Length: 318
Ligand SMILES: [Zn+2]
Image 1 (cartoon, rainbow, N blue to C red):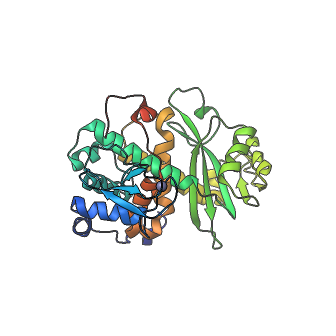
Image 2 (image 1 turned 90 degrees about the vertical axis):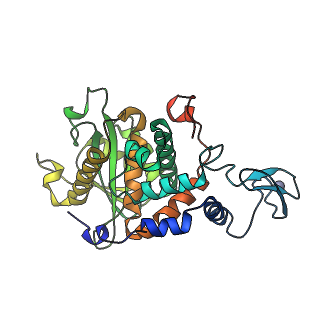
Image 3 (image 1 turned 120 degrees about the vertical axis):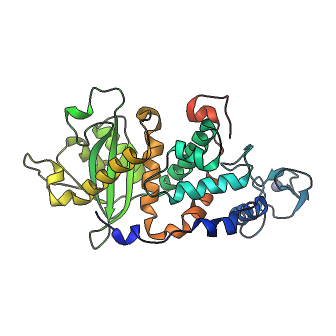
């Protein structure tokens, strides 16, 4: 298996995490520092002069210019939460440290909350990961392939005709030594020229050199200003060719990750989240010790999510 040196890299230990983020005050301070490193800035008018409003559950600021009030958690992923920040921080730690992903069931046990609460915390954090990675595009040389969640990994009939199968694009950007640097795992409606053109527009930098097998839809990348190199597979599957070694390693890892950490889930509804969580971790694998801090930042810039948006269930909140 590739990249062993990464697997042995030390992350932040649980005692160290507890020392830094074990109390509500420590978490609030860390959140404030991460959100406003140079001090409070009004999110409405960008003024910095402010007062504190005493007696609130979360530290609350009033802008001296526009007089709007902003709590520490307002406008972030934590908005309206009834959970303590220590629990959110612990969830961030557990989710970001789990190399092969963490199921909501495991999170429920470790956090000591109900399953629906753990499920929502988990999905909100995965949404933050997805939004963070969407801010970046792949550049340079990029291997791409078609894959399916819940089915055979390659194209053809195996991927079609089943209700719980989700097509997704697997893409690996290589560095100058031809090693994988960043990945994207993106569900697409289906493998058509238009779908790939749209995908490339959002996820690739213009000028990318894209390598794929001969599946016609991959030509769509040229519509996003990318070059396209087709590797003729000559009847072989891409996994038998050295040109696709990284994409194959990646898809093998995705499969292991999903089967190891998660029970079957509704691929159609939640594929984006699970795949984004895998990609997020992979893309930051060289800096494991900073993962919790980075995920905290991702949660701060992720807009508040309603539970109904996540799964059409308004009875539970977290
Ligand atoms: Zn203001």
